[in-house]
Image (cartoon, rainbow, N blue to C red; front, side):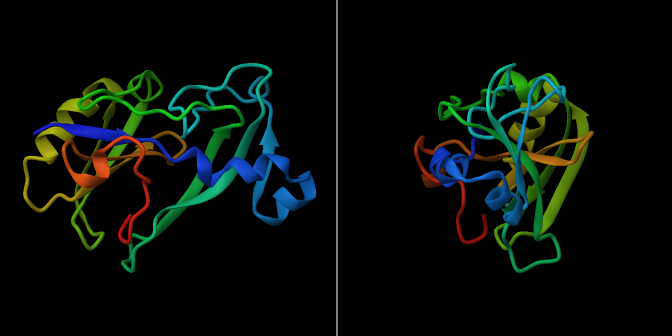
Amino acid sequence: MTFRILALPRSEFEGLFALSDEALAAQRARRMDPDAVAGMPCRVSLEDAVAGETVLLLNYTHLDTDTPYRASHAICVREHAAQAEPDPGDVPFAIRRRLISARLFDAPGNIVGSDVFEGTELASFLAEGFQREDVAYAHIHYARNGCFAAKAVRAGSACARPGNAIKSENN
């Protein structure tokens, strides 16, 4: 069974770029310079930021469940990011080129499997994981910083269609 990686929806972040630095700080966010920090992968485009772009660093609740695994972490979003819609079975280069921590979750939001590996191994991990009936979705993290990268679901599921929001009741 194959998978689809879901980028975060651009619409969740559009209004933030118009905020002042003070208003961003009040929301635990700030503008970053891609020149100053190496490796700023955008969670909307699933591509690395480049010099001259406006990028926001913000805290994002990526696992909004009523379990001990509820979680948030820092993510980056490029101001003019095009919405990524990877094809089923495709792993974007910004993920493939990094050390990855992946976690498999059941429907209530409990971890039922996890591993750390090079991003080039993610497709195999997800394909194997989604063969298990207890796996509802997976979260992909950049292992070195621990930051949430993207969510993966079974290809063909209702939430796997391009344009659907990444968040759901159990995220």
